[in-house]
Length: 600
Image (cartoon, rainbow, N blue to C red):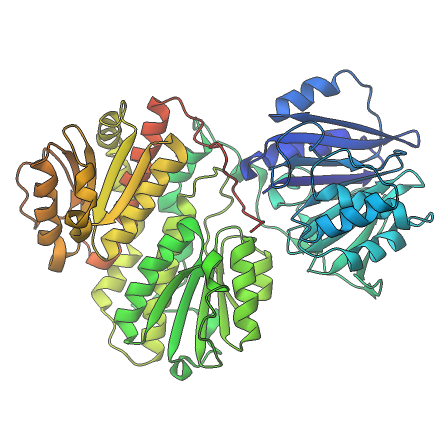
C-alpha cells in the first residue's frame, strides 16, 4: 500500500514525481503530496483525496526544483486528512520525508520526543521519524538517518531530503519495497516498477536494512550501519504499454482478457512431452519432506487451497493451507523436514513475508511463487517460481490468480514426478491447451453480463461448492465483494442445511459450482434445496451432470476436473466485473482496498 516517488537530477523533479504517483494509484490511497527543493527551501504540497486534487493545488505554484519526493498514502495511523498526508516535515522546514510501512514503537518514541519539547502536527507514526531526524541532524542527514534506523522498530521505505544538503536524497528500506532507477543525469526511486518505466528500465533493488544516497551524477549504497556495498544494475523486461489500458475501458477488463496470453506464457517451456519442467527446483530433494504448508493472503490463499488439494492427492503427503496473517501466530509445526510454499502476486505482502521468515528460522525449505521480478519474497525464499502475468494494475486480482493456479498445478505434478508417482499424462496435455479453453469462455461474455443483471438490485449473494469448487466459490465471492460491494458469502454446499439456508428467501441469488464428478450430484441436490425456498440459481457445471429447474446453467468445457478451477474463475470474474459496472463502481480502485498490502 502507499506509493513513493523520488527524483534527484538536472531536470525538474515534479513531472517524474507526479507521473510515478499516477502509475502507483492502483496500490490504493486516500491522500497525496510532494516536497521539492526550491532555491534551497522546502516546498511541500499535499491534499486529501485523489491525485487530481493535488494536481489542481500544484497549479498555484511555480515548481522548478530538481530534487523532490512524492507519496500517496493509505491510512494506517490517523484518518485521511491534509495533516496526516505525506510528506512530513520538521518544525523549521529543513527536513522532509515520505514513508511506507509502520513504525511499531512510535508511541514510545513520540512520548520521548514530546518530553524533549517536540510538537507533533499529525496523528501518524511516520512523523516520529522526521522529528527524530531533526533531533539527530548535525548537518549530515545520512549520519542522522543511521541513528534513527537504530531507534525505530517495524517496517519502512524512506526517502529523505534536507535543505542543509540540497543535492541528495537519502533512502532506506526494511520490509517495504523500494526500487532505484538510473536515468541520464538523474537517479529516481519508487515503491514499484511501473512508476519508473516511462523513464528507465535499469534499476537497483534495495534489500532489507540497506540504504542509498542518491545524487544527480552518482549513487552510493550502504548497509544500515553505514558500510559501503556494491549493487548490480538490473534491466527490467517490462514496457510501459503493458501497464496501460490498451483500448479497454478498465484495467480489470483488460487483465481478464489477457488471461489466455499470460497463462500461455506461464506454461511456456514448462511442459515437455507431457513431462513437467521446473529447473528452478531441481536441487530440492522432495523425498525428505513429511509435511507441506501453503501460505498466502486473499486471492493467493484461494489459489493455494486449490494447489494444496491437488498436491496432496498427487503425492499422498499431508498438505496444509494457512492464511499468512494466522501462520506465524499459530506456532506452526515446522522443522528441516517441512516444505513451505509462499504465494504473493506482488511479492511484497507483509504478512506473507513475515511467515516466510518464520519458516526459514525454523529450518523449513522455502519456495516463493510471485509475479514481480526481484520482489522481496523472491529474494528471501530459497527457491522461486515466477508466474508470467505481467504487471497487474487493477486492485482486484484476475490474471495473477489464474496464473497462480496454473503454476501450482504444474508444481504439484512436478513434485509427483520427482517422487516417482503416477501422473495423468492426459491431464498434462489438457493443461497445455488451457489458454484455448479460456479464450473460448471469454467469447461468452454476454452470458455472464446477463447473469450479473440478476444482482442489480440485490445487496447479498450466496456461493456454494464442494472441495475444489469450494475454493473457486470463495474466490468468486471475494471478487464480487471487492468490486461491486455486494455482500457475498461462500459456503461448502453440504453445510447449507446447518444454518446458512436460513438466509435463503424468494429472490435470493445463489451461484453454484459443481464440476467435480464424484460430488457434483450432491451439490446439485443442495441447489434444489435453495430453489425450493425461492432462490434464483446460476450454475456452472459440466455436460455430464443432470440438472433440473435451473434456467441459468453454464456448461464448462470437458476437461479434467482438476483444471475446472482455472476455467470457472473466468465467468466468476466477469460476473463481478459486470455487476460492479451496473452498480456504478470503480472496478480498478475499490474503496478501502490496496493492491499491495505491505502492512500487517
